[in-house]
Length: 192
Image (cartoon, rainbow, N blue to C red; front, side):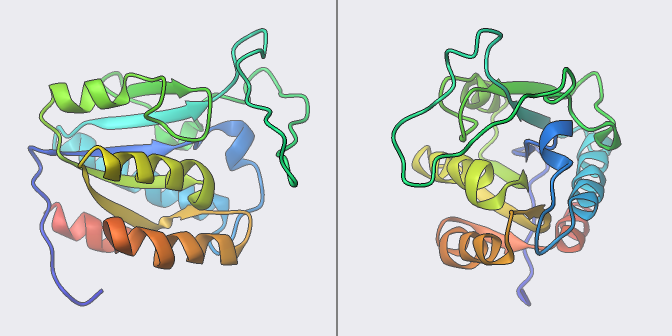
């Protein structure tokens, strides 16, 4: 993007979707998972330095697994056995004591969690979104955020999907309609 934009550091939070060991270990496109984590970690560090809220969202079923979604679908998602640390936030995110960890049980980070409550109590009206997968957890969260009236900035290179096509469709076909798509570098620059 060539136009400039600013970020109100008093009303903006970072929301990182599913950068957890079991998901970040997968192959992603068009950005490698390691690059997504590196860029998200840079954003988190900058937000923390400015005393801006950082929300680390992870997904996992409850211990009995009965809250996992399993409606009939032509291409249903299949889950294999999960390791004990599957839902742990990746260490590269350098989780800080002041970070908020939100555990969700489905794709989107708003439904059934305290994310909206915690954002509103801090007077947040803008969120910077990133994570894996662009077209699943990030997009579901983005659609809910839009319907709740949040301004959104999408960190294009701090997100990825299982295919470049899925990532591009979300970034260009959906996110440009409900927010602003920027690079990590552009977002970091706007925080200065």
